[in-house]
Image (cartoon, rainbow, N blue to C red):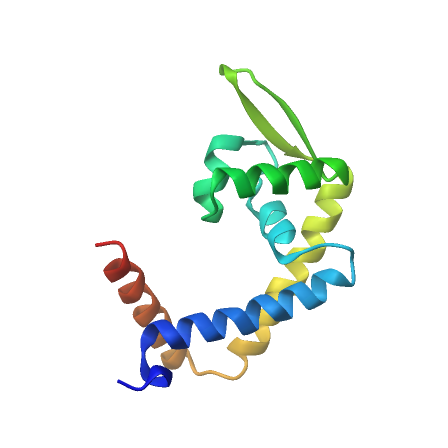
Length: 139
Protein backbone atom coordinates (compact mmCIF):
# COMPACT_ATOMS: atom_id res chain seq x y z
CA UNK A 1 0.00 0.00 0.00
CA UNK A 2 1.30 3.42 -0.94
CA UNK A 3 2.26 5.40 2.19
CA UNK A 4 0.14 8.39 1.16
CA UNK A 5 -2.92 6.15 1.16
CA UNK A 6 -2.60 4.70 4.65
CA UNK A 7 -4.67 6.07 7.51
CA UNK A 8 -1.68 6.37 9.82
CA UNK A 9 0.36 8.34 7.29
CA UNK A 10 -2.55 10.70 6.59
CA UNK A 11 -3.16 11.20 10.32
CA UNK A 12 0.50 11.68 11.18
CA UNK A 13 1.29 14.12 8.36
CA UNK A 14 -1.92 16.09 8.89
CA UNK A 15 -1.34 16.27 12.65
CA UNK A 16 2.23 17.46 12.02
CA UNK A 17 0.86 20.28 9.84
CA UNK A 18 -1.73 21.23 12.46
CA UNK A 19 0.86 21.11 15.26
CA UNK A 20 3.25 23.28 13.25
CA UNK A 21 0.47 25.78 12.59
CA UNK A 22 -0.47 25.95 16.29
CA UNK A 23 3.17 26.22 17.39
CA UNK A 24 3.80 28.99 14.88
CA UNK A 25 0.79 30.88 16.25
CA UNK A 26 1.72 30.15 19.89
CA UNK A 27 5.26 31.40 19.27
CA UNK A 28 3.82 34.88 18.67
CA UNK A 29 2.73 34.82 22.33
CA UNK A 30 5.88 33.22 23.77
CA UNK A 31 4.09 29.90 24.17
CA UNK A 32 3.73 26.44 22.64
CA UNK A 33 0.89 24.29 21.40
CA UNK A 34 1.38 21.99 24.41
CA UNK A 35 1.10 24.91 26.82
CA UNK A 36 -2.10 26.09 25.15
CA UNK A 37 -3.54 22.58 25.23
CA UNK A 38 -2.70 22.27 28.93
CA UNK A 39 -4.39 25.60 29.71
CA UNK A 40 -7.49 24.43 27.84
CA UNK A 41 -7.43 21.11 29.76
CA UNK A 42 -7.31 22.64 33.25
CA UNK A 43 -10.76 23.12 34.77
CA UNK A 44 -11.58 26.48 36.34
CA UNK A 45 -12.26 24.73 39.68
CA UNK A 46 -8.87 22.99 39.56
CA UNK A 47 -7.67 19.76 38.02
CA UNK A 48 -5.75 16.99 39.80
CA UNK A 49 -2.26 16.77 38.35
CA UNK A 50 -2.71 12.99 38.05
CA UNK A 51 -5.74 13.48 35.78
CA UNK A 52 -4.05 15.97 33.46
CA UNK A 53 -1.56 13.59 31.80
CA UNK A 54 -4.16 11.05 30.65
CA UNK A 55 -6.53 13.86 29.64
CA UNK A 56 -3.82 15.37 27.42
CA UNK A 57 -2.33 12.05 26.34
CA UNK A 58 1.20 12.83 27.55
CA UNK A 59 3.63 10.98 29.81
CA UNK A 60 4.35 12.04 33.39
CA UNK A 61 7.87 13.33 32.69
CA UNK A 62 6.67 15.53 29.83
CA UNK A 63 3.73 16.71 31.92
CA UNK A 64 6.02 17.57 34.82
CA UNK A 65 8.28 19.69 32.58
CA UNK A 66 5.25 21.39 31.03
CA UNK A 67 3.69 22.18 34.42
CA UNK A 68 7.00 23.52 35.74
CA UNK A 69 7.23 25.79 32.70
CA UNK A 70 3.64 27.01 33.13
CA UNK A 71 4.28 27.65 36.81
CA UNK A 72 7.48 29.61 36.06
CA UNK A 73 5.48 31.76 33.62
CA UNK A 74 2.88 32.27 36.35
CA UNK A 75 0.10 30.70 34.29
CA UNK A 76 -0.76 28.03 36.87
CA UNK A 77 -0.37 27.37 40.56
CA UNK A 78 -0.38 24.08 42.42
CA UNK A 79 -2.28 23.71 45.68
CA UNK A 80 -2.90 20.75 47.97
CA UNK A 81 -6.02 18.76 47.13
CA UNK A 82 -8.37 19.16 50.11
CA UNK A 83 -9.97 15.77 49.33
CA UNK A 84 -6.63 13.94 49.03
CA UNK A 85 -3.76 15.13 51.22
CA UNK A 86 -1.19 13.49 48.95
CA UNK A 87 -2.51 15.01 45.72
CA UNK A 88 -2.15 18.45 44.19
CA UNK A 89 -4.67 20.46 42.22
CA UNK A 90 -3.62 22.63 39.30
CA UNK A 91 -5.32 26.03 39.05
CA UNK A 92 -5.07 28.70 36.39
CA UNK A 93 -3.88 32.11 37.52
CA UNK A 94 -5.44 35.30 36.19
CA UNK A 95 -2.77 35.35 33.47
CA UNK A 96 -3.43 31.65 32.84
CA UNK A 97 -7.13 32.36 32.25
CA UNK A 98 -6.20 35.15 29.83
CA UNK A 99 -3.84 32.86 27.90
CA UNK A 100 -6.47 30.11 27.92
CA UNK A 101 -8.98 32.47 26.31
CA UNK A 102 -6.40 33.30 23.64
CA UNK A 103 -5.77 29.58 23.03
CA UNK A 104 -9.50 28.95 22.86
CA UNK A 105 -9.95 31.75 20.33
CA UNK A 106 -7.20 30.29 18.10
CA UNK A 107 -8.58 26.73 18.30
CA UNK A 108 -12.15 27.85 17.62
CA UNK A 109 -10.97 30.02 14.73
CA UNK A 110 -9.22 27.06 13.11
CA UNK A 111 -12.26 24.87 13.74
CA UNK A 112 -14.53 27.47 12.13
CA UNK A 113 -12.29 27.79 9.08
CA UNK A 114 -12.52 24.02 8.51
CA UNK A 115 -16.24 23.87 9.27
CA UNK A 116 -16.91 26.62 6.71
CA UNK A 117 -15.29 24.49 3.98
CA UNK A 118 -17.22 21.27 4.67
CA UNK A 119 -20.84 20.16 4.53
CA UNK A 120 -22.55 18.73 7.62
CA UNK A 121 -22.40 15.32 5.97
CA UNK A 122 -18.64 15.62 5.40
CA UNK A 123 -18.12 16.69 9.01
CA UNK A 124 -20.21 13.76 10.29
CA UNK A 125 -18.26 11.36 8.07
CA UNK A 126 -14.95 12.79 9.31
CA UNK A 127 -15.90 12.20 12.95
CA UNK A 128 -17.26 8.74 12.15
CA UNK A 129 -13.91 7.79 10.58
CA UNK A 130 -11.89 9.38 13.42
CA UNK A 131 -13.96 7.51 16.03
CA UNK A 132 -13.44 4.25 14.12
CA UNK A 133 -9.67 4.83 13.98
CA UNK A 134 -9.60 5.68 17.69
CA UNK A 135 -11.58 2.56 18.59
CA UNK A 136 -9.39 0.30 16.44
CA UNK A 137 -6.18 1.78 17.81
CA UNK A 138 -7.23 0.95 21.38
CA UNK A 139 -7.79 -2.76 20.76
